[in-house]
Every structure is written in C-alpha cells, then in structure tokens.
Length: 127
Length: 132
Image (cartoon, rainbow over all chains, first blue to last red; front, side):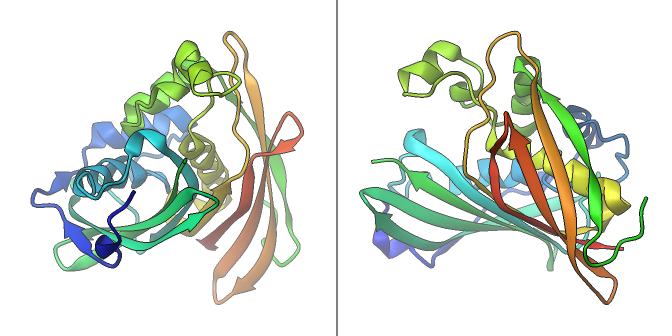
C-alpha cells in the first residue's frame, strides 16, 4: 500500500545519468531504427523506469505486483548522446479501484535547468 | 511518403516479435522482469505464456511514428496497454501497426495509431503528435 502522504511529493535523483551513444544504438537496434543521431521516442523510459523505481522504493509500493497500465511521453527536444540528466519523479495520483491500487508517476528528465522529456506512467498494483 | 493531412491513412507495417527480441529489449531498456523471458515464471503468476513488454510494443509503435518524419519529430506519444502480446517459444508474433492523421495545426500532425496482434487490439488510445 502506497503511503498516501507521498502523493504530490517530488523525489529528485542525487546523481545524474549520462546518455551514451551505445545505449541509444542498443535501443534503436531492437526496433530496427537506423538513425542514432537522436534517441527513439520511447528511449526515455530506459532512464525513468529505473530512476523512479529507486526514488520510490521506500514509498510502500510493491513493485513485484506492478503492471504497466498506460504511458505518455512529452518530448521538448530529442535525447542525444552526451545528454546528462537529473530525474525527478512525482507521484501525481493514487487511487484504489476494486482493490487494485492505481498510481500515476510523472518523471522529468532535466538537463541543467531545461526540461527535456516528461514521462507519465500509470502503474496498477494488483491486489 | 504520402501527403499528411486530416484523414490521411498511413500504410500499415508489420513488426515481428519473438523471444529473442524480448531479451534484446530487456537488455536495451533495463526491464528484466521475468514475465518477459521466463515461461515457467510467467505461468506461475497466471499468464498464458511469456508476454512482451508493453513498452516494447510502444517502442515499435514509436518506430512507426518516426517513419512519418523522423525520430526527432515526435513531440508527444501515449498509449494504454489493454491486452498482452503473448509470445510463445519459437514463434514470430506479428504486430501490425497502422495510423490515421486526425489533425494538422501549425505544422503539428496528430496521429491515431492502431496496434493489432492476432486480430486483437493491444494498445488503446494510442496517439502521437509529430512535427511535419
């Protein structure tokens, strides 16, 4: 059960994540994308999923029971190799539907003071 | 590429998903959840078999969206994961993506995507916005 006091709170990673050309290439290869000058549109999830899990690990959320319900990306500019991001994750909402907990987590990837990509993940924690 | 205007239907494209691709996606994305790799584990938690990462299906739909005017043109992209893509051992599962332009305003096209697997819709409300 998610601690309700955490709704609306933002957790920011202490360390930054640097995007490598190899990481973009590996992701691009899986989907058959030949252009690796920029990262594919959903590449941000490879950063935000892990970051938000570690930021929210003490939230009471049982990650082993989590199913991904929906996902949204807003991309201000494409991610490129060499980008250094700090990730901030906010629990935007949490509600209980038929015993399942439905939690929406927003994660922002910031480069310096610029917001580059925002991701919203709705997670269903099965009862 | 056909002209992009309201009502333009984008040609469908088929992507093959198999167990090897799931391992490649797990390694590329960092999502090593065993339901996407380990048949015994997947069945132990009530799934019919190994299922694809929802985000792999979405990544492939993102590739489809990128083909309209490049990866750098994608501004927004969202989808719901409404049905799992079941991936039995030794089988190439076909994911068929198609799209339709629903709006073009000030150089931004909105596209509704349809993602079908074995004649079942696997993504709901799949929508993208791209610079054209």
